Image 1 (cartoon, rainbow over the protein chains, first blue to last red):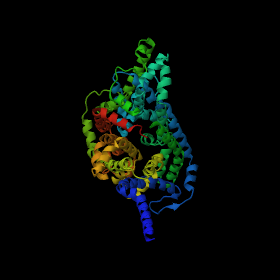
Image 2: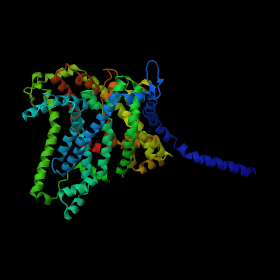
Image 3: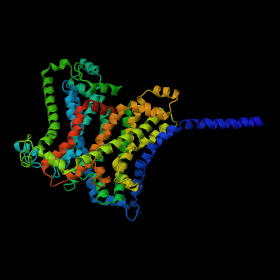
Amino acid sequence: MDQTAAAAAQSTQSTKRKRFAPYRQNISGYLFLVPAAVLFILFLWVPIVKGLIFSFYHIDFVNGDTFVGFDNYRTVFHDPEIGTAVKNTLYYMLLCLLIGFWVPILFAIAISEIKRFQGVFRVAAYLPNVIPVVVLYGLWRWIYDPVGPINALLGKLGADQILFMTDTRWSMLSLVIMETWQQFGSGMLIYLAAVLSIPKDWYEAAEIDGAGIWARVRHITLPSIKNLVMLMLILQLIATSQGYQSQLAMLDGGPLNATLTYGLKIVKYAFTRLEYGVASAMGVLMFLVLGVLAIIQFRMSNREGD
Amino acid sequence: MRAERAARGIGKARAVERGILSAHDYRRPSTMAVMVVMAVVILFMVFTMLYPIGVTFTNSLKTVVEVNSFPPKFLPAGLEWGNYKEGWHYMDLPLFLKNTLLLFGGNLLVTMFVLGLAAFTLSKLRLPHRKLIYFFFLMTLFIPPSTYIVPNFVNLKDLHLLNTFWAFWLPAGASAFNLLLLKSFFDAISDEIFEASRIDGASNWYAFSRIALPLSIPIVSTLAIFIFSAAWNDWFWPSLVMHGDPKYPLATAIYKKVIQATGLKQNVKFAILSMVALPPIVVFLLFQRFILRGLHLGGVKG
């Protein structure tokens, strides 16, 4: 009797030990994860959760926070500038697509066909990425100046002067051109690598079957980089929907709110009006919209990774 | 496989191999015409890339009258090196440079030790539930940073980190993207080295610090490029978190004192901008082969 009980006790003990054994062996492994976990919680999860909470509070650094229910959201929806900001953001995203998105693809395909000096083109295209953005702000203000080089050229051609910065029809477009100029190189390098990795015998086979140059590009090159193009599209939409830095630095949202984007509006609510609650509510609303895009991106990048 | 092929494509010029066009195509005059148009467009692209950069330097050597004259000329009449001296005295560039380098160094160290350790653990130690833990880290990628920029700032204030370098160093260890990069790098290293070291009695810490870290030089250089360009570029966030000159990094200082300045002479402004733009350009041109390859290792950055 005693023996069987002892044996049973021992066996439960041993299964217990077995169940916990992997954890005990890996105690140092779990310890290794602690610093990263602490930092992720402290600097990502806490702010994210706090943002949700703040959106229901009036934040006051001096007198303490007070619960205000949905007041912050009401403020957002009643602010007439919010509509302008959403419209400007969509306009900015559209311009970035129309002007910025296809340029790197086109140049990647073209440069992949150039046999000589390819390295030089790559370096030249990437160079603007290397220059700090604050330098670009100073530089492009001069380039866009009413008496700057572009207007000098336009004057020589007999065209009217363009007020790139102060004309509301031009201001957003001018920023998009500047950003395209700066960022196009890194996108092009990514596409170029993809285009160069397409097996060359596919073109050979297509040519033997009588496919012209355009048919080869359309039926081999473009389909081969389709997943990458889609991924870059989603990444660009996510990035441009949050854009505010060049709008802030170059024009501070002006002229007449023509470059006031949603992201810039958040920044202004928070850091000029000190309405942290309203700004947090705007962040939550933005998250709801962008969350959908981010999920699509995740599924796409999984497909791209195989 | 695909990436490898691409990396090879980046690495060396392929003169003999055909591309979309074959030797046969080149013989047709219509193709040649298209090629010429394409070459012109590419040369125009190169010109538009290089002109603004070149003009930054030439403007910095002009006199005030010259730089404000219309229409602007590309080359200066004389070389006004005095602009650089004036710019150097206008602001304490070495101080701001030191701050930027402090941010860069601290961020890189934290990334390698905190995220490197976590990535190594998730990749090489077969912990139970490691997938779940990895998911906990990666989930933060879904949340766009500008949606929590405001609570992030308030959070730093609550932690009493405002106006300290820790406000940058510590959050550097909370980057899901860099964790992803490091983990996929460790995933590609063979497990056998680590198993052999374990049989020889090496501890997990030994395996990380003496085997994994020394093997990760390529990924360190990729991360160093990303982290450096972030530290060198970011002006807005430091302008909120840091409270004044002694702590501002270079980009913020340039924004506050040069871009927003009204009284600064245009040519001196360009001299300062040139001094800030020159170091990264020189580093890039010297190491462009490694940098472009390192960027490729990083793949698509979100």
